[in-house]
Length: 513
Image (cartoon, rainbow, N blue to C red; front, side, top):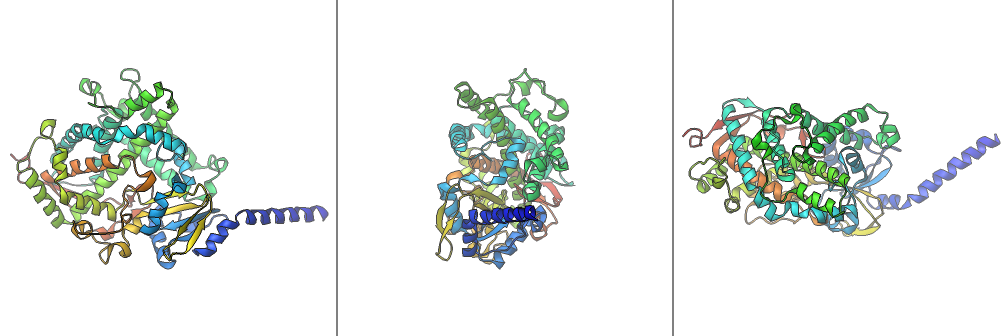
């Protein structure tokens, strides 16, 4: 009996200590009330399915006045979906580190810019900035145009057919990402890249499942799960892929089954500027980066460049297919800029930066599609030290160190408080016309502030080039409607089902002349 009494006293004392050590989190919970979670798992059972997590969080935000506090596992998190608080968080030097669960991605694909924390992130960001500078992006234009021409020719073959176009766009964007960041021509459009796409998708799905399952947070538990075994299979495939990208030509044998046959022209491909790989090798030679750093950054940057850009490009195409009147306006703008169709395989006649700057309606369309279908729907941050902020009511709140922050970009982009009564409709001119004024942080497709996306200019220029090539030559239509889309809240926005589209050649495109 005495032993049992001592044991109970010890457990009680430990419990009191845990409560006392977390008193700051409980205090902020009293100041910003939110939904109660279950012990140890928090709201996990309500957030297990990616297909419903965005809808669930949006419903909570209507029930509780955001920002509010709740729990994921045993971690306290602040939920934010208003532009005023977004600005405070994104500008604060105390909130630059990614949320703790991003370490699951770091374990799977490497600790690159997407997942790393300060001071590692600060150093790598400074070293890799030149790879996505304005000068570098201008040098990428011939690649953008040449690969867009290849896509247009493939679309000409499929015109009149009903198909899912996301696959076509993913292949072209991954090919461009490899050429512009790694200086390697991979031939992903030869239908031999299935394993690579499955690996990227699989890594994302396994990591998101773990993020939404607190009982799998401990590595010692996760390593005995079936999910871990799947993750390892995908990680090995991506590691081989990245090793091929990093290898000097001729030193590593490329797997033909995954990467396609490399022709003499492909092997001689050379980007007319420094790419990410060139810059990384210089820093390795100067002992500023290690070989492992190079592998991590290559894996993360290729994945982020391909995944985010292909997602945003596809959603822009889909929105235009759903809204033919907007597609006609865009076509009219493109005809004014390009009165005659052209063969963009000749890079001298490709789209220029000056022509891109004239595409004002194109900007509105792209922004509106990224508003409604945010390529990155939610961002997680971790508070690195205690700091104060004012909530929307003007009350001064202390956010304790290690508070996790969920910044819900998807639901903020659809909020009537920021966008008015037509927030859920595709209205490019209404929401992004020249005389429209909104809070600077109400629209965050690439985030803002101290940790804004390194490749946002790259993504925007590539999207404009691709969309101009596609919609100058084709009309895309679909029977699906925006309200019917089943969105999935993963690291990048996904759909439960991808609508079928029909491609028709314009009467004046280069294939009918």
